[in-house]
Image (cartoon, rainbow, N blue to C red; front, side):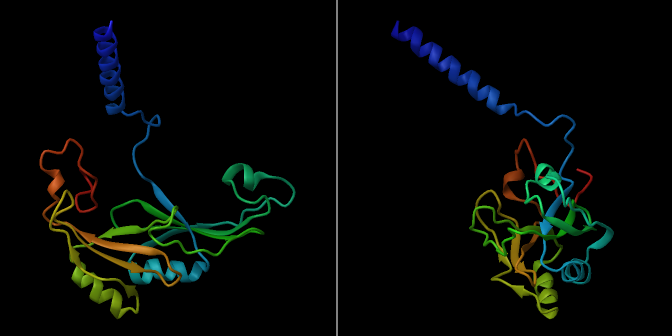
Length: 199
């Protein structure tokens, strides 16, 4: 009896782990299209992404609001009286797009999350030379952090990183791994990279 329970438990564990290995997917999901960011000043944000980072503005549209109903809440999960004053889309080399929002809302908070905060985030740009990127950014008056930092151990060995900050506090990163990263040897899944966008 104990052996039967043990075998059944082992079989359930094996089947469960096999099911976990084959992940489900949103039907037709092809990849990351864009990241949306709410900014305090649209001109400042567009200028930063186009004149400092080197992205290109693709389009702008808006405003959007619903004075009488709950459209904004129903569609976006924001205060019903929230207003999207403007949306601007920028393209940054080979990679997904960035969507900039200028919102006003009765319950709007002005918080700049740290990377360690729940909900904190950063945007990373692949560059050919992190040291050259740091010199360029500092020449433009952009706040940079420690680095370039080469990663020499573990699965990410081979990359070099540098964090920097937009004028309104958004965290960004310059990253490079010209010879790949250690995890790639024998990896079943290799991360997409803008240095080889066709792969």
